[in-house]
Image 1 (cartoon, rainbow, N blue to C red):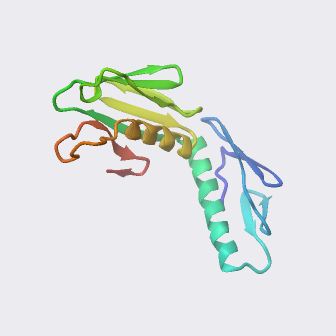
Image 2: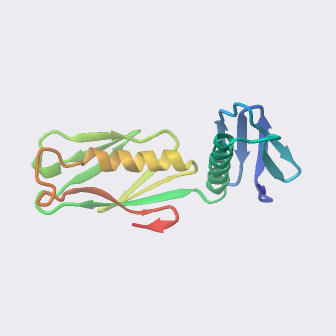
Amino acid sequence: MEIPANVEVTIEGNLVKIKGPKGEISREFNLHTLELRKEGNKIVIGNKKSTKKEKKNMNSIKAHIKNMIEGVLNGFEYHLKVCYSHFPMTVEVHGQEITIKNYLGENTARKCKIVKGATVKIEKDFITVTAIDREVAGQTAANLEKATKVRNRDKRIFQDGIFMTSKPGREI
């Protein structure tokens, strides 16, 4: 795997640290019999004879490292939209928590967590979640969607909620 020019990679056993213009990410991988090393400006994952399971593991590790490099170079951004038909919802950020008030006319506010490392920006009915780690940004966006899931009602009629409109790399 190629390492871009403005990215610095250090490998210490199972731990991979990647540093770039947007920040630094580190992750520990479960390698089992695989070996991970840096040769020049390349990352090499593998062993002498690989089984199918080890090849699958290699591809997974490669995908994670690729996402880490992409994150420190460009970052990841999820866009969500607040949708309501009758009761106007208000969404506010309080530290590491988001409160959703007046969802379907409920008196109690719904809350969801912002995963450490993600930033949430709210502009009217649009929410933007950004982070350098793809999993952190995705989990925060998923927490927002899950907090407004319709339960014990007909989903065809009650279509209020917070929904993803775009993920990194594609529109939904």
